[in-house]
Amino acid sequence: MTLTEKLLARAAGKARVQAGENIWVKADVLMTHDVCGPGTIGVFQREFGRDAKVWDRDRVVIIPDHYIFTADSKSNRNVDILRDFAREQELPYFYDVVDDPKGGWKFDTSKGLLKRQFGNQYAGVCHAALAAKGHTRPGEVLFGTDSHTCMAGAFNEFATGIGNTDAGFVMGTGRLLIKVPETMRFRLEGRLQRGVMAKDIILHVIGEIGFDGATYRAMQFDGPGITSLSMDDRMTIANMAIEAGGKNAIFPFDARTAEYVEARTGLNGTRTSFDPVEADADQAFLSEHVVDLDRLEPTVACHPDPGQRKTAKELGSVKLDRAYIGSCTGGKTSDFVAFAQVVRGRRVVIDTFGVPATPGIVQELQGTRWGSETIWEILVGAGVRMTENAGCAACLGGPVDTFGRMNEGGLKCISATNRNFPGRMGHKESQVFLASPATVAASALAGHIVDPREYLPK
Ligand code: SF4
Image 1: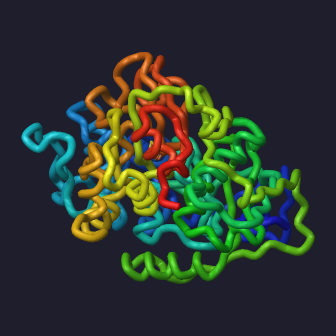
Image 2: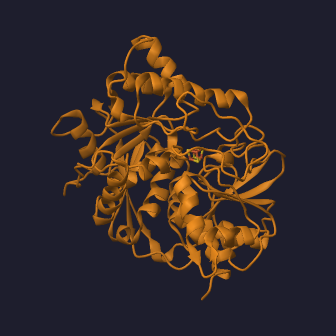
Image 3: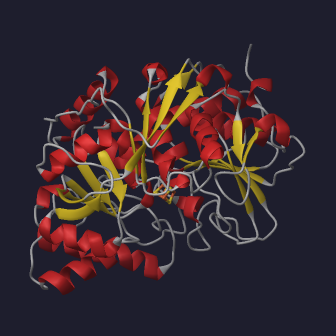
């Protein structure tokens, strides 16, 4: 069996499963957020009763992150619904925006969009927060009401996005009927070269198979090239499996996975035990692809979908209006570090927005010095508008007052985010080009798309 089949067989209590089989699996964690949480709670209460209790309060994780830092009252109300539910159900893992369980969040205009407007429990973008707060463990099954839940496949677990109806059912029963996906294997060989990042790997792969090339399939990334990839790198890759239609992404377990998970679960008091899966010798794949990391170039996905692949070098004539670094895929500490290495001592020439994925990342950027300046100061000094309000922000457009949102048609943005269908970051006539943080940084300096290697020290 492949890694995904092994995980699902275990979760179904079976010795073997095969692709195409429908099986009931046990969930280890259910995650929901402010966009889908109210709908999920509505389904749960309608089907199980207003006074019903969730199947296991230690396994329901609620993370408001999408439409948070906005004066839009309907968005604010969504978080209030989550707060009320978490209090009623006594959920230990509700990462509220405010500290008072009976409180409410209100936009403070005197602070504006750049200064911190959240309490101590707030965790930021759900997928990054799940990992940082110790809710991702090898060998487990994670369901989340968000398509990028597949990011946790980096940790050798089965993680996939589900709709509110399924999530309401999981909330009541802890189980879900799943069709075992076929597995596509991506064997990584070699090592990334200077200026080429994990984002380039996944943009290359999606360009190869198309934005629907892995529909309802598991994308298994393995091979000797994996060993040099950090957990942040693996998360970047797994996150974007859904951009090829993938059901899930999955990575093998290794010492790096163990080190990351042990540190995060230990720090946050979540379950520390886990049981990874290893692939069998007789894995059967739907298809096998080899990715030679040594030969990859800085890559861009052009408007209007993540499969429109070109190299950065080929796109030098594309003039830009703005640049954006942030999201679960591209707003990690390592992403900002790569960005800062390019812009250090220089100035961006287009509007450039930076949104860290979690408050912990804000702290790391503000607490890490390169010489006399922190990384945060280097970014701000280069002209990047950095907000402390970690969250999804303009990755998903959001209400019109969302930080970094494209409110006008005709704008072209290069972005370290993961999705670029029309209207994704705001106006439906704006365009988004997806790229690595290094490519976004270099392009922000040039005002047009550029290969970041032109800006890196030799
Ligand atoms: S950062 Fe973007 S992709 Fe990630 S969860 Fe938020 S809206 Fe979705």
